[in-house]
Image (tube, rainbow, N blue to C red):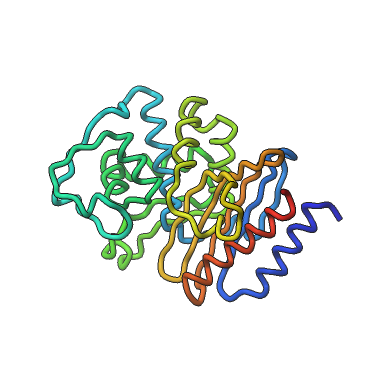
Length: 261
């Protein structure tokens, strides 16, 4: 049995001890191979769908349609609940597209996200998901849109979609090298942790995007181990509590880290 097969077996054994649904995708960036456990299963994305929004934004920048220095003025009508800092500010402030992108990723700001969804268009974002050949990624509603959710619209992704986005960013092929480098840098400045990094040493550098809803915790990241970089995505839902979801992600991440460090 190969090292990856043993690792997959250990993760599967851990998943069997858990309540709820867990999907995993792992990719060894040295070996250029990996494995998944329910990796193609459609899962609620929570904020991980923001990776697709970021990719579409950078595509539009790459073709010269927009500039990262373009500014948008925040109005009272744009106010959005949930994660973020913009909702705490008075309307009337202007932010560059780059600033809104950064807020969307590093603190998962929902108001910044909805501003960018309106700016780019939901249809264009979903066309980007198709162009990237993602299996389940779909933006069906804006952040915190409870009415759309009641009407049956939601945001979806799978573990392999996140793996593939992160892999293309790492390899410099997501849009182009310059765009990938910028996206990677933003992901490295993520300020939300406590999932994939929960049990890891603080010095481990991770570029990642996480998300959560009630009893749902997701996280996917690129781990920059000096001699053994890798990608790990863990999606959970229907967990007893969010704490259970975060700990499950953390324990799977620890299993992988111990195998590769």
